[in-house]
Length: 196
Ligand SMILES: N[C@@H](CCC(=O)N[C@@H](CS)C(=O)NCC(=O)O)C(=O)O
Image (cartoon, rainbow, N blue to C red):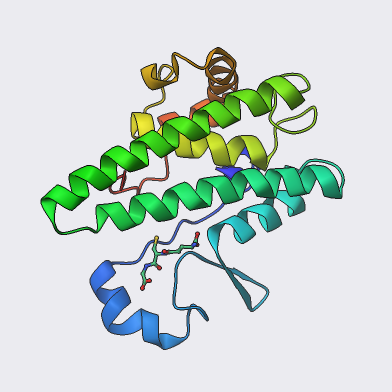
């Protein structure tokens, strides 16, 4: 999404899970043995949120100054925690534990929506999460909420956000940015499924 918003051409290379576990994971392609990876001039970065902040800084989608960038990283870390929790629940094989895990993860997501609501109320200039322009702070929260509640759907505001009016208005403002709406309507062709 950051590449799309910055107007940079990119190729989204996805790997087949079987090929990953039998071949690629051991190949050294990813030094940490995890995806995603970003290769830049022969050097490799892993960890999605480190990749996010690097690419955003390179492409002019980071807030100004160290403190505001730390705030963007803080929001990205909150999303990373939710993603870790949800991934663990999704791979749970015991049906009862999975159901309980999903309910608890959902409660956690809604708690964090309360936090985002307060964050926007306390600290927003012109309606953005950090600073006075769209940054990766907005993109990381938006991409998560869109994927979690609406499975990538371009239209509408998640009804689960109805108790959070400021977050809802922010969601719609981000959603209707022309490049984001275009990306939502034409996501990279190889999105196969949403994991949550
Ligand atoms: N915190 C990491 C999580 C990375 C992660 O769990 N990646 C999964 C794919 S989405 C993975 O590489 N799984 C395969 C494996 O660990 O072998 C990040 O945000 O990049």
